[in-house]
Length: 286
Image (cartoon, rainbow, N blue to C red; front, side, top):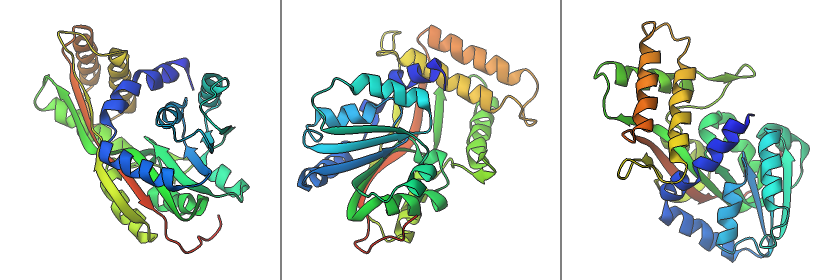
């Protein structure tokens, strides 16, 4: 986990703030306020941006919040950010991935949060584990779930551009971690079936698209860095693809970076947010 990735997490906060679905967030907040001594678990918590959002709503004053992430650098960044923050009740950080954490705990939480992370996991494996971490009848808040739409404008090559996007999505569909499937380019729509399979009730769902554009040739905040990171991520994912002619990907990437530097690139990604409740029946322990 490099400092570059932490800077990316920081740069995308303004992008996420625009994207998060207001209706879904309000449904989650109504539920959270109905809980006495709210207990929140966030998986893949990164550097703590979601904790900050919860704190600003006043949800965390009399609550406990457990944040886990497999990257030590992310947890260190989050811990440093909130150590002296008096707005939050009990705040606990742990370096662990979802499956390690679930196997080692017998606790359960009123609200399970996953922000921009489920599209990196295999839903068939992840959803029952997430359910087991939630209290029966408790809530889940799953945000920024990628759902198969990526746009870069202006067009560089009407044939190459869609090919690069399609191949990039394909890398999500075939990603393997530790010999197991991990993620999908249509996670958003697949969540409907994955959640219903485990008797979860979706109470609110809505789009949470990333849209980044320049105003008078300038991007908001540090969003130029965010865009550079996205373009580099696409190039890295396709660097060894036998389906692209040698040199074309590099030319595409250089032109996209140049468009960012000139304040010309527009980028969008389609995503979905979900809030709902786990079934009231106890879940099998992991």
